[in-house]
Image (cartoon, rainbow, N blue to C red; front, side, top):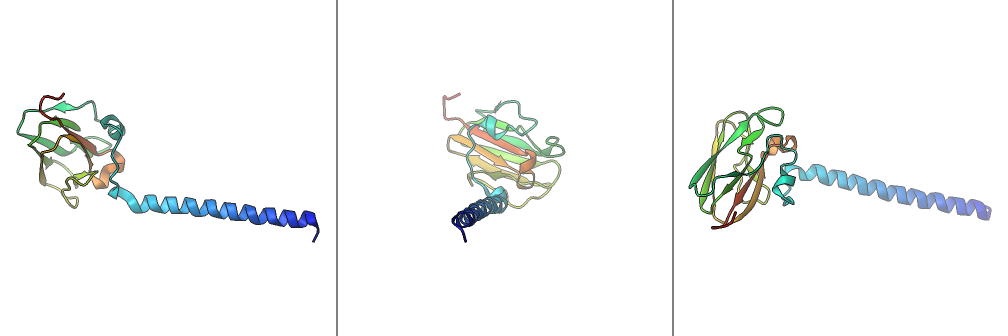
Length: 160
């Protein structure tokens, strides 16, 4: 084998190794995305960013001062009965939110595991009392990719 042929063979081996490595990395990334599904617990940058693909979000509804608040589940939105109303809500600490299913099979899952209504079902209700100030983002697991998401902002006393 000539020196030129040896160099060409070495380049082909290097190229195959690099392409194989890229392929393995892409496959691993794809599988990780498929396996993680709705079990992600990322914290969104902001409510606006979290709800950017939710077609009925038009701001945060202020319900501070109320001891309990109702959020409807399965209202018209996101190409079907895939919405929450209100989509985003501000409340005071020690407020209980009751989610009421109005149509379809849904659930309510917090992105940071603070609450979870369980498996999707219909004609259900779920309650959670928020005691700590902060922003809580949630979704319906079967319809998350369609934009069925919501947010709760628990405001400390005196904050806006």
